[in-house]
Image (cartoon, rainbow, N blue to C red; front, side, top):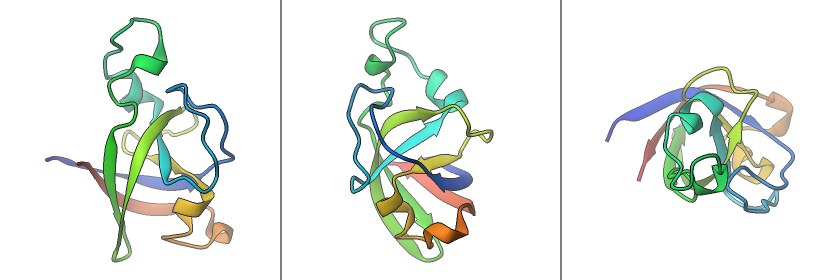
Length: 109
C-alpha cells in the first residue's frame, strides 16, 4: 500500500466529521481536509458517511509504530498527508511541548 508523509499535530477532541464523539485517550486522527474530501461519501453531503471514517491506519515516527483510526477531518492541516492526533496518540511519538512533528509516515491497513 502507498504510504503518506506529513506533519503530526494534536488537537482538543470533540465531535468529529465522522459523527463520532472523540476523547483525548482514543488513538484517533483527523486527516487533512484535502485528503478527506477526495474520498466519496455514501450519502453525498454527509461527511459522517465518508469512506475514510473508521478506517485504520498505521503511523510510524522515530522508530515507533502505532495503529490509529480516522474519525475526523482537519481543516487546519495544509499538507495532504498531515495528521492531527489526540494528545494520547501524539505523546506516543513526542512530548506535547514539541507541538509538531515532521515527516510522519503512515499507511492504510
